Amino acid sequence: MFYLTKTPGILKSLYKSCIWNFSPATNAVYLTFDDGPHPEATPFVLEQLKKYDAKATFFCIGKNVVEHPDIYQQILLEGHAVGNHTHNHLNGWNTGTDQYVANIREAAGYIRSDLFRPPYGRISPFQVKQLKQDYRIIMWDILSGDFDTAITGETCVQNVVFKLQPGSIVVFHDSRKAWDRMQYALPRVLEHCKRKGWKLEAIV
Image 1 (cartoon, rainbow, N blue to C red):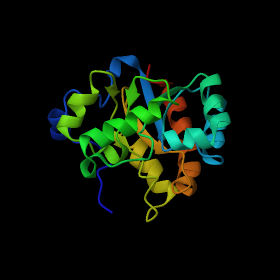
Image 2: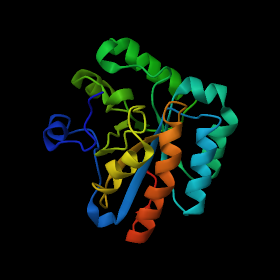
Image 3: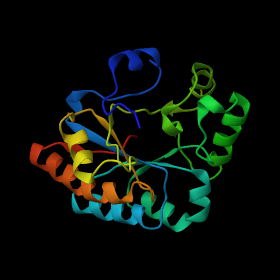
Image 4: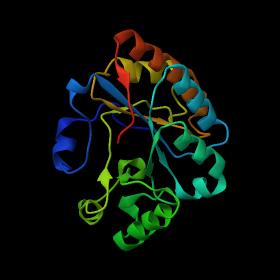
């Protein structure tokens, strides 16, 4: 499986209207979690965030919110931000724009947010143009790689901490597929940020 754990500047320049990172002057790191809510992974994430007085942003799949409304409400009650991640985890490159936007609108019936992240990071320029009137499209500059079953949790830690700096937007997944690696990596990344004196904030 090929993917870049650090987003190159050329890709950021091609999608300038998307948000890839924030100013280092914030002295904050922005942890994000995709694909939940999940009945095992999401409560674990919330517990770890609470231990470190950290806030994060959860990009939720609409159908998972329908299936686990109590966990979704817990995310909100604990002061975290949420974003739309489509209703059915659609790949924008393989989906017509009308269908893609309709799926996002369906998810918006359950997820009240002006934040959107495209699943897999795959979205066409025309889809961006259609969505940016209503949404801030949040991408990332660091992928933990926790979705990759071929790597270890320790590799996920290294993928993050060796590239992490204030202003970084980091992707983890609160999903079954990522669970083994995420549960190892997240506490260690949180501890690293604490040692560095960086705040951990939600995207608002």
